[in-house]
Length: 327
Ligand code: NDP
Image (cartoon, rainbow, N blue to C red):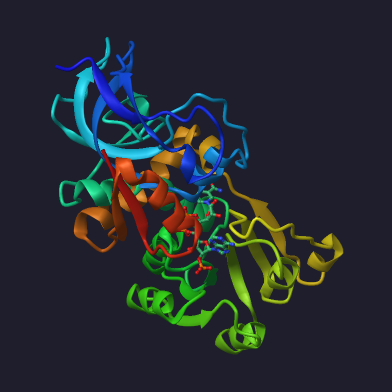
């Protein structure tokens, strides 16, 4: 067993140029933790913001990015008895941009055997966020309509799949016809270009003038207030999940009164700590994943050495599905 591994150790916040390979000691799992030999890492928009120093919480250097990954169990910390060496797992944690990573045993996710390592790495962040947004906080009800933004992206494709599994009507928006094709193939009922000048009319027409019941807001910025009010049905729920545009947005709260619209913030990290809702989401998704009804969409795959290119690919809006990085 070697003593060192390749990893991306961020010593200075910034863009893709700060992602260089270092040689680091292989981490040891402490009691209750597990070491994973990393096979695939899911790249999230949040990883990019984190490395840039623009995330919800400010990153402290040095750190190894990578919050979701799959691989095999390589070493068990003291007291961990329910996992086997060599078992394929996925994990939500930190430090995935490396050949080995350690996580608490509680951060290991059950992975159906039919998923590839890449699909398993694409699962945790997007699917739990989609579930919590639609169901736990969005209270989706059978037959309601949901508006999915950035619909061909990692979260967007997960949201379409889970929304269809919840029997929701899906209106998908994205920036290019190619991205709309991906959304359509996943079962979106209506697809519209996000830049369409008459987007509001198209959405009202698609909903018999009612508007959408749930709006999964990930783009933010310009036009947010319009989307969060005039696009909404009575008692609609605006789920504020992201601000990929990185533009400021404004909202006059009195505009929400007319239709009793709620605006709800969503952040995956603290929700994962509530075991009751984590288990509920897992119970909903596991059979869908095992049957193949729901399948993570893997986008372009990059080597660890090319992590900077992977960041650029997502940040420039060129990506679809979940971009994967492999050490
Ligand atoms: P995606 O795979 O969806 O990629 C980002 C997409 O955002 C782009 O493809 C693009 O889609 C859209 N976008 C719109 N404006 C811009 C812009 N100016 N620059 C770049 N992209 C833009 O990424 P993720 O699935 O990782 O994340 C999607 C969003 O959800 C992000 O805002 C992220 O921070 C958020 N998120 C939040 C979580 C939470 O806990 N709250 C958890 C997971 C994700 P298009 O070209 O179609 O507009």
